[in-house]
Length: 303
Length: 327
Image (cartoon, rainbow over all chains, first blue to last red):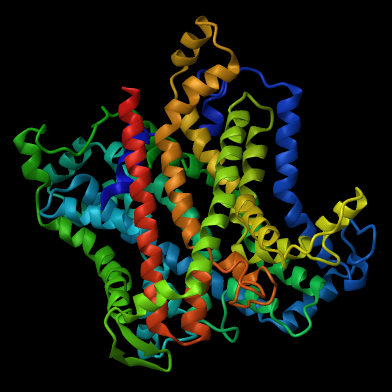
């Protein structure tokens, strides 16, 4: 069951790593490999270009007419047809509604996951109770189970409840995550001093008081990281929403999947729609990118 | 908007690091303080949702796989025992999808993890604009499968795809990427690689930064070249992390679904005209939601889980053996 655990915990460090980007500069870390040469910069720039290009191409192709992108040599700069294509995409698929739905779905999932996983992560990190080891093993073990194994009964369930095409059908099953519990546990084990908990107990605070006024403030940085990663994952979730929803009430991903299946696929319109559906995450990513990078690296070291 | 509020962080660092929650080492007083039934209350919300929407479905899928059930008659299947499993093992579609899942999986993970390792090495230099490079490399990860696949399916397009245009520009022949077995699988592997390389590079980078500098200094004194240092210091130190990424990528590869579904652009479940890139995930979806054979789909889902278990098991054994050999 706990096959995933050894490699994960082996990488775990007990001290919380400092915010990776700023603090390291100057001393210790990052310097092991010494000063980079021009080759390093060239290679990295190349990788950066490859990373960005498909997204840039979405903009280029989405802002031309079909005939224009088919020209040789193809255009490499955005053009004026962008808004016409946006309009056409919005007519073909309810992308506006989809974005609203995705915000609702990903937002609810994020709130639920962060709350429930912090509660459970705290209990697994700091409280003693019977069966704790077994329960934790269960949580870690299910990280290996493919989504495919759950969707059939889930579909039966939502069919029974008449939730097909309703947002709660995609919110509820994703409201918790095994990764989140493990992540919060790893963080709180080291970040939350037992002395602080004991002090709270001595002062006679109830267990839930202790949670709100001691655990949550300490857990806040990890909760923020978990929130960002959860939101991103929930926004991009594909398989289950595709089954549970239809293009009549889609999330962004379901709407995008429908966009390509028109009778006469129009390349530029598909690209414009893709751009519309991706823009919200790209904007969030531009603002919070540094924090997301830090969060992933922190999560990596912690498990 | 910073996530690390300074005071909390310092408090966390300044406090004597409690190494683990291991109770036996603790004095009795603390055990009394933390041992209580509240633990159940804290894990209850998680486990209620978890049991209803994960554990129960996992089990129920096994039950469904022993029935002949169709999507239109969802609760009234007839018991057929292991017949679905026998049918599956005799089905050429299943073996085709298994083969494709493996080949695409290898094409998508091996080069990806190798490149991620090299990339992490580059990112570990004292770089100007390091935040920029790291953030840009993570952008594919933020792009959804659907968006990425739609873009790439156009880049790989036969007639006006940019990649073919470029091939022709340098005097090579255009390739009908979607039609060929190898070419379509390579193209799908490229999509996966594009989305995940930066993410894995960051994971490796984080692990690299926690390698103590003394190891490199010692190697330097011994006259080891940079390449030797990478081979004999970096790689062994990263072994647990590498194993972890292999396991995670493999689990992802077995479930590959969105990329092959959308690669042709129109969401057909057959995975190409001759199933040349139909994966197990896609086959399962086709059985259940195109052909309405829910029982068959459940069987395929269980087969996928078994494959994951075997692969994870093999990885764990290899990891343990190698770790032992090192000592």
